[in-house]
Amino acid sequence: MSDRSYLGIVATENNEWIVVNQVQGEMRWSAKFDNTSEGLESLAKFISDRCQRPKICVKSTNSLGLHLILHISSVTDIEVLLMSEAGLRVHQGWLPDLPARTATPQAEILARCAERLI
Image (cartoon, rainbow, N blue to C red; front, side, top):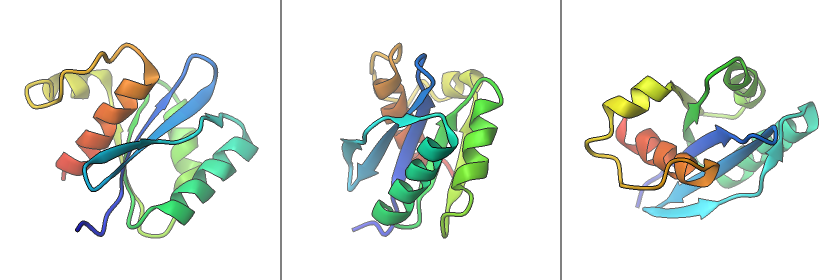
């Protein structure tokens, strides 16, 4: 039994964050969180309340990811990996074959990356 939570977080086109929490190999999808101060505070609370020693992989193509990291950095024992599109391509050999065009499968892939990457 792992004492870690592995999460993938990705922004949607609707200015929201989708979070997938991998718990003992099972993917659990969370609600969407608005990309507002209140939404990011709710996201940080979700991570703090439901995750142990969270290791998070965030896909970001702009400053949104850095703004997210600023809000969740107060979570105890958090570790965050910022993944670029090029970084995802590097890992395509071992990543599962998921349709990565939508936010939820991308968040699943990022959760797997969080578990696998040091």
